[in-house]
Every structure is written in structure tokens, then in C-alpha cells.
Image (cartoon, rainbow, N blue to C red; front, side, top):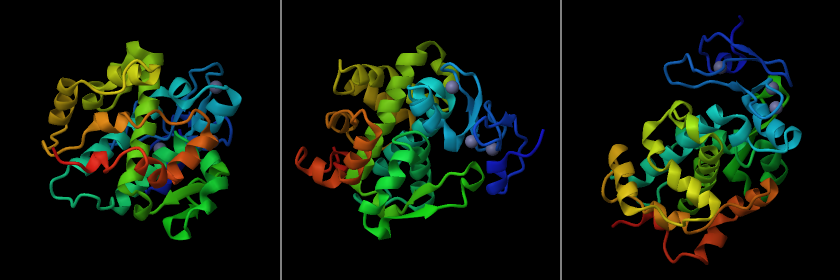
Length: 274
Ligand SMILES: [Zn+2]
Ligand SMILES: [Zn+2]
Ligand SMILES: [Zn+2]
């Protein structure tokens, strides 16, 4: 087997397990072989059973399977979704951080990767990104170049407290949907066992049966992640509601998060100390 193209871009030696059936890029597949547990593609579980690279999973699941990444590519959705959700929880509950301060560049890159790869997906982001102030983003042509796709790279300043809540809601929605679809496999699909604690509640939230997390579940989750008691109230964020269903609507909702959420909550719920 050859070297994974995307690992190569990150200067990591890693064998590919196959190639993307859209762009033929060599890709590494789960289970991940890298120490940092990253991987760059997955076999589609919806109908076709073919392998797709990270740049092509959202477009394939949305436009070719008429489904979504959490159904077709649950391992990658679980990895990137739980990575984004966990990162936001850790950022807002870190005691060494000033409330409302922005994430670092590495964190912004991780959140950008979730937004481009899983939800709302780069094909929905790219046509609308120019509506944002140009200090907040750039187009990275290099990163997904071989796959023939562009990547919307968001600056740390894009991730205000309000926008992070909306990214949290997107990740929570994808993880809740993943739970509903692949309930029996969750233990093997989720790379992060702390996130498993809240998955059933996120599944109920997606179904519309629940708007908050039980306090006991939330505190067990935060404790397992090693978060301080000054941590965020995740329930208050879930009360903001589910993301819009259509990808284009999700982009508008995310980009204008500050405006939308200030009419719903009087203070940034994620930043509030208990
Ligand atoms: Zn790779
Ligand atoms: Zn591809
Ligand atoms: Zn497919």
C-alpha cells in the first residue's frame, strides 16, 4: 500500500488502506494507526460501500446518498464530532482561560476541520464565507488540493463565545444523530469514552424529547473530562435549540450566531460560572 496523501501533507508517514472512489487520493482508514488517532477516510455505510476521503464524505453523503455523514460515515463523524464538542467543553471550562477569550490557532484549525468535513460541510461554507469580514477566514487551496476541493480555514477570531455555542450545537446534533442510527456500535465508534456518557441524552435532544441534560449526567461527564466546577452549563446551550436542517441555513445561522443568540439569552451561557 502507498502513503496516505493527507498524512503526507501533515508530514506523517502512514500507509493508506485504500483510495477515495471520487478523487482516487490514497487514504488511511479506521481503525487509526497514528498515535494521535487521526485518519482520513472511511467506507460508506449507506448504500455504496465505497471508500471516500475526508474532503468528499459530506458531499457524498448529502448529495449522492441523500443522507448525512453521521449515517454514512459514523467513525469519522464520531471522531471529528466528539473532538470538536470535547474541545469546546474543555476550552470554556478551563480555569486558566479568561472567560470569552478566543481559542488558539491549533484549536481553531480543529474546529474548522469539523465544519468543513462534517457539518455544515465545505460545499455549503465556501459560497457564503465571503459574507464574513475577511479577517475571519481564508481559503486553503493546498490542504485538500489533490481531492480537487478547497478548505475554509477560520481564524481564532471567528470563534467567539457565541459562535462556539453554535459549533457545539452542530457537533451535538451530529453525535445525537449518530447515536440514533448506530446505537449498538457506539462503544466501538466513539474514540472518546467521556462523550459516550452524554450520547443517549443527545439522541433524545435530536428526537425532540429533551431539551436539557440531567444534572447528574452533566456533572459525571464534566468530572470524567477533568473539567472544573466553574464549567459551562451545557443544558443552557442545548436550550438554544437544534441547528437548521439544511446546510445552507446552517451556514447563515452559524455566521450570524452572535446576532441570533443575543436575542435568546442574556449572557453567554457557556461562559457563565456556577
Ligand atoms: Zn491519513
Ligand atoms: Zn476524495
Ligand atoms: Zn455511499
